[in-house]
Amino acid sequence: MPEFSKLVLTWFARHGRKDLPWQENKNPYRIWLSEIMLQQTQVVTVIPYYLRFISSFPNLNILSKASLDNVLEHWSGLGYYARARNLHKTSIYIKDHYDGHFPLDFDQLIDLPGIGRSTAGAILALSDNQVYPILDGNVKRVLARYHAVKGWPGKKKVEDQLWDIAKGHLPKINIANYTQAMMDLGATICTRSKPRCSSCPLKQTCLAHSLGEENLYPTKKKNTPKPHRVTYVILLRNEDKILMEKRPESGIWGGLYSLPELDNKDDLERWIKERADCYPSKVILKEDIRHVFSHYSLDIKPIEVRIPSSFSKVKLRAVESWVSKDSFDQLGLAAPIKRLIQSIK
Image (tube, rainbow, N blue to C red; front, side):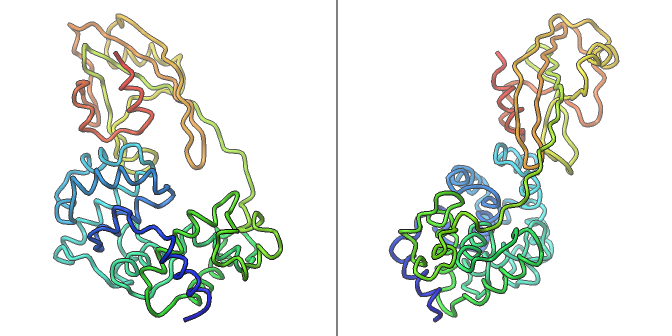
């Protein structure tokens, strides 16, 4: 066994995480679910979502029979909602094409929605002890520092180099423990800032550490200012009901329920006249909400519009419906929209 993997496995035996929820009753479905949830999301954030999700959808068959709205409601607040849509789509595909049995073949896995090379490798290594490398953000960081690999890992040339390195370090045995160990090492020791090098099993042979340049690796992507956008959302109320609309499946908050939007507050009067053909009984400008996406920031400016309780002639589009306040727990809502609605008295 190469010295690198020996050191990693010895460290894992003493210090690795062995009590994570998806490590109990380990199977491909549970590993797949955890790996998808952990994409771009920290373990501490994922755990409560995972526990609730696995309680409602304990196996692939039950998930495949669930409605997308129900799946998205369980995902609400976790972000990157394409992951939830792909989970649901993949569960249906596996039910239809593999008789509900999770495939344990690499080529079959990477053909499924939302499963790339690293996720497929993690599923096979952690659930079936198959020898495949992984290269999530934590592992990229460990390997880039250990070998002092220059260049931003998002570039194909650099990523290909890291894949070759990851493959070269693989042990032939204990692959499940090794895979978990590499993720744990990046998450708890070789962290993005202030790495705990004194506790690292690889410190004696790590190139970045020997040079005192741990914070130079991996090379950061050149910063470009995030665009900033503004949207006005309309809380149209009729007694205890609020007008909601379901967003298209693609794009931001895809498939979730949200509120009608306007680009300009000056369009509000025209919108009310066109949609409700009545004068509102009250218009309230509510506190702005700042929401940051991976590629831009958004200021949400809510406007609460109350129409007379006796009036119910709002022209509904196909994607719209009136939702009573006690029914919102059953809908998939983006986190800022959910907080906004919960603040309504």
